[in-house]
Image 1: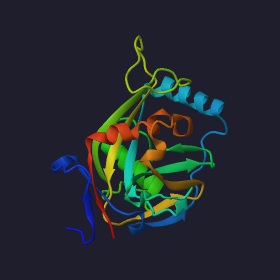
Image 2 (image 1 turned 135 degrees about the vertical axis):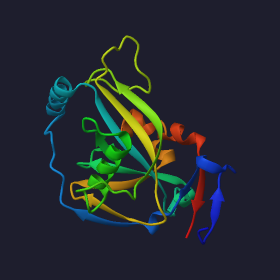
Image 3 (image 1 turned 90 degrees about the vertical axis):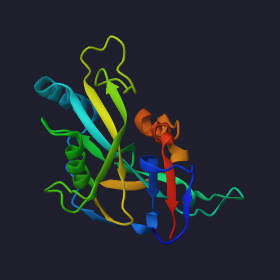
Image 4 (image 1 turned 90 degrees about the horizontal axis):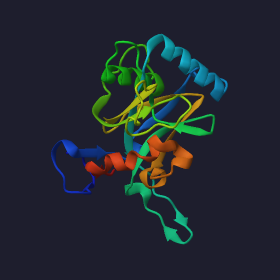
Length: 224
């Protein structure tokens, strides 16, 4: 077992227990920026429509990576102890919108291999091959988009016979320590679950729904 303080917040056992390690155990550096595919939302929608016409349903896979946060100072006279609270690793694009690490699958590519490839491209130094060190766990949620201009739903909307996009969320279990290498045009942020909960205005419906999806897991928080 890991040295340090352990806290199983639900007394669970087995597969539903998720070990979460402090952010201080991880190392961060940068690499060359990933070229932007679109200059505007209109350009993105046009590209997605062209892709759908050529390949059909667009399937995306995204990873949910959890860490423990930091001990914050006094806030309005109250001690905020978020260092014991799980945080989700999010990528921030152009200091504006947030997204989970992941992306579109290639034709014929499996969910797991595709997500490992995308995680390596966004968060590892070596992106030329799949990083087998990524421990991709179960799928915890599936979202559907009936049209590229509409918001995604956690179910297939009625009377939708040809959905345009399917997004699958997978829990990714992190080891005790590792290095994250992030493209220079992206920021990797650790955001507390209590901040993203039902906060679709800031994080969108998929990210803001993550706390609900994680409610079936027990968090074993392991401190330094």
